[in-house]
Amino acid sequence: MNLMSQSEYARKRNRARSLISRYVKQGRIILVDGKVDTEQADKALGFINENGVHNVHKNGDRANTNSGDNYWKEKTRCEAANASLKELELARRRQELVEVEAVDYEFSKLVAAVRQKLLAIPSKIAPITHKQKTIAATQRLIEQGIHEAMNEFGSYDAKSGKIVCPRRVKTK
Image 1: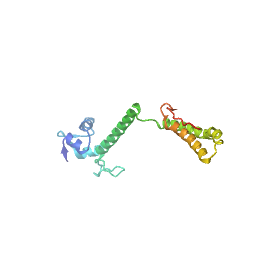
Image 2: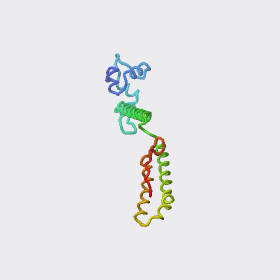
Image 3: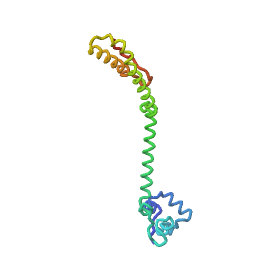
Image 4: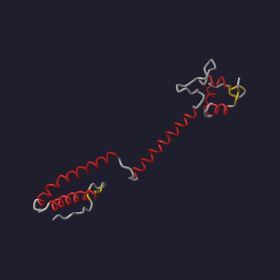
């Protein structure tokens, strides 16, 4: 018979002192001269079986080891996850973070506008290019049309979804 105080037994089993005290009050753990009989308590709490063999969890750990460590590791992991979620929420409220759906929507609008502008270049430039006498002059007009379209999107404001202060290239 091995006897120890409730505090010592609680430390040995990685349990709170209050939990051991509660088990004493419930009669699950029996005190001998005010001390815990460790063999009886281990059997009562399932740390060892009736044959005196330590019970083993599915993961291979003995029931009396690492249980407190696992609890604290899991609690730490949970607290870290909650802190990360709060940081993300704060960043979102400060408008430092945007939703993927919002970015996808704005990008889709921008791509559609670029497509529309690029498809409009031939009809805008064709009436002017047929009057040109050289290939170089025609090429310059086409390039100016492309640059004009690209400059408009270089000043695209994602918040408003509008083009801000577009620079216009004059064509001849």
